[in-house]
Length: 68
Image 1 (cartoon, one colour):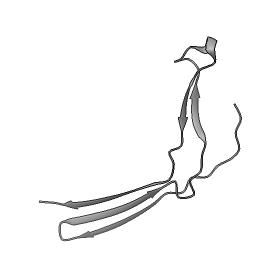
Image 2 (tube, helix red, strand yellow):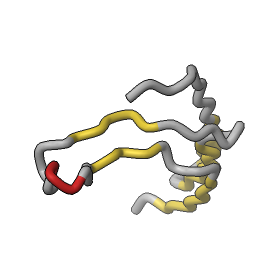
Image 3 (cartoon, one colour):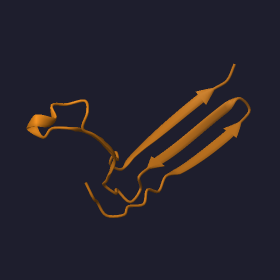
């Protein structure tokens, strides 16, 4: 299997102060698509099926923590 080149860009912004921590995370900002790994040994290869690990689409996460 051949595919074109792709670049993945992630960004993380963190704020910490007096026992508090906040983090904003952006993953795959440019929303690139690609297969990072393909395995033909775990499915029935006679039918042409296989397992592919695909780059997740653009997403974001926010966390807020307090340390005791």
